[in-house]
Image (cartoon, rainbow, N blue to C red):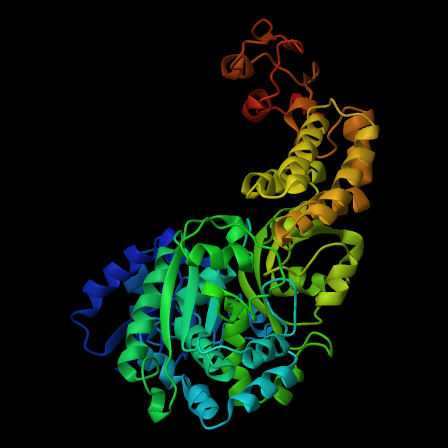
Length: 588
């Protein structure tokens, strides 16, 4: 019998789906099986298939099983050892056809190349995959050469704005000062976004190596990873990785025998969305309230404690080691001329393949949703995709051929953002979507700017009235006017982009606003106050199920006779609609 390796995905998504139970069963099973090596890994990106177990080493080659039943997992392994394909959900297969092979093959993985492959708590696993060879190569070059390489690669900051990373590094490198800092912004707060979490859970050393290289290039001797405390597994893996890197001599004094010292710390954020803005983030690291400050001076001139500071997000740092190892020219072969490389996206919403993907820049939205993401989750047609989180916008079905690069996405009125992508079908109300995101940013506003603090509140009040059927036509003009002034009058990116979900839904789905205002109707049947439930007499058999379920007793009628809903008492909860087995209640 050949020796085999069994890997279990134990990232947050896997644990939430029951992977820890699978792992514990396998621990007992493998204890008496010296030919089986059990290992932990993180998420390969297919969160919708968790728990995932990978088997390798036998004649069948490497296969991955999805949605693994913990009580059957040992049977799957026994079958695999005997050369039989397990009677399970084979999602990836090296020699056979896995149901998700095409989804993975459609990706280009640079940032995620080790996620779901290595044990994130093992520095030896990372080194076996070429880890820290880029650092050795960088330290054999001059800091100026490293900055020049990052510039030549065309890498743009993956945190949202897309500012050229090499240019940003050059500012910090030229800045005068005996003390400099580099910072990793892992304060991921967009609804539906989990790129940073998965990257840090799955491959923390790659981010750390990128930061060490950046510190060397810019002359920094200290760094911070600012990660929100709601990511306990990411923080735990970072702590293990930092300790291991220190023990191996990749962090600390005289790194690899060079006259280069670098210390790295973790700062746990309290979960304020505004702390994703770099000046607010630095205030938080310094122990102050996280509120944006006026720029200039920019962080490269005066950042943490008044020292030159460079801030990049998780994904940006995670590109650095690959660029150093493979060259700027190789990186530029991926993506487009103005947006080279790849982009990581968190797919959420009404999409079959919810999870994490990495695709080359220049791919179309259509290919992301229908090829890489596996298409729609429901039978309802695609309606829109929200990109850029609360700071982004909604892109309609008519623009599905839009290329995913910074300029093309910006032209739609949305933004690339850090990589959140929420897919919506025809059952989604776009006015409700705008209300949801504006409610989020209004709650997360630090309150420093009058336009952001009060302007977003006024916009939210108008949207609330519209969803309740109390809107007026002039409300549309008021929304647009308020949006313009909030964008112009806000200090930081939160306020400057807060109106984007409203502006894009007005731009592409104005008819839905008009339906809410003029017809007092929600076309998607989502806004509770505008939904009307009526009993269809020809279909109602008088079973009384709706009567018993109604929380306000607004349905009357005799047994075996058609019932009637009292519209004045109805609270539009939908209980009757849900419980009726005869399609005798209409919703409109």
